[in-house]
Image (tube, rainbow, N blue to C red; front, side, top):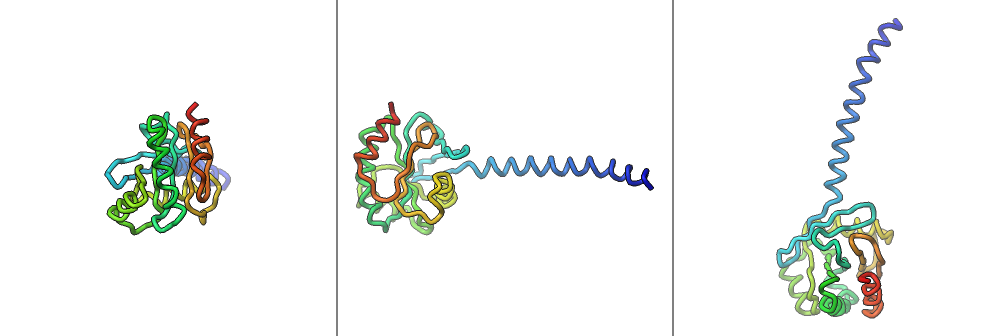
Amino acid sequence: MFKKSLISLALLLPLFFVACSSSSEEDESNMVASNVYQLVATDGTEFNVTKQGSDFIVKGHENKVVMFDIFATWCPPCRAEAPHLSHLQKKYHQDFLVIGVTIEDEISNKDLNAFKETYHADYAIVNSPENARFYRAIASATKVGQRFPIPLMVLYKGGKYIKHYVGQTPEEMIESDIKQAIQ
């Protein structure tokens, strides 16, 4: 009886580890895929963002200060922020990139471009199926919760978190943080 149990255990044990190994590789593959975001701007520009821990790295812009502006077109403070973010984008264009991320699921690029024109949002605004998954990841990383107020603006330098702002924020305050990050 003891011999049968030992043989059964010897046969089942390798199967258990093979199954665990295969599952772990699959989980790791899914985890890598879930940490990559392909965001597409209204003008067709693609931004590939990789999440590593609480950091978000924008491929091709690793040396820049990047601000993700999470907003909605119907939000008065978001509308008010747009020209200020455009001014900063223009002023620090070599070192600073603004990417607007709308929280609106069913909005057309035409409506977003009308927002850009009306409120002078002269920076990239992404409108892709990845938006919700992306801004939820940002909200988790910054610990603002999933029901956060907008606008939520988050600064990164080289993918590393610098600071975030909730609600309308004075341009001078954001500019001060950009200058410190650039140095």
